Image 1: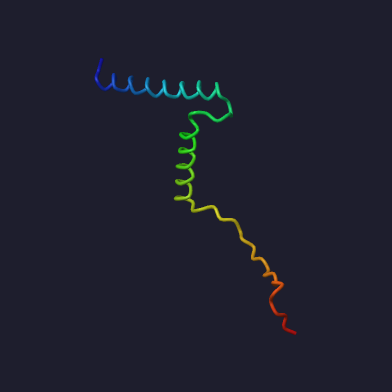
Image 2: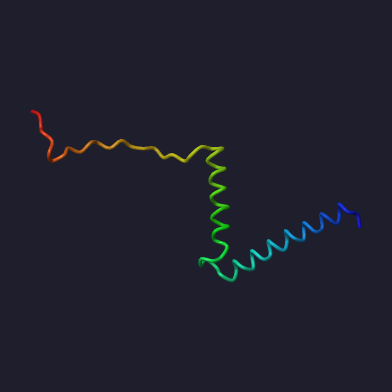
Length: 77
């Protein structure tokens, strides 16, 4: 076989094996914590970082609160 074709077939096989293993492992455990949680958290963290880089941090509209008078403060007439 052509060396470049052989390389492509090997890489495709490795990727397919990893994906199938991931789905089989997560199907066994369901939503309960498992060994793959650190990987999942890392992927989600990287995704959030990329989104923050391109779109900026998600900032909600902040409403200013009225200052509350302290019980010890003096009241001026």
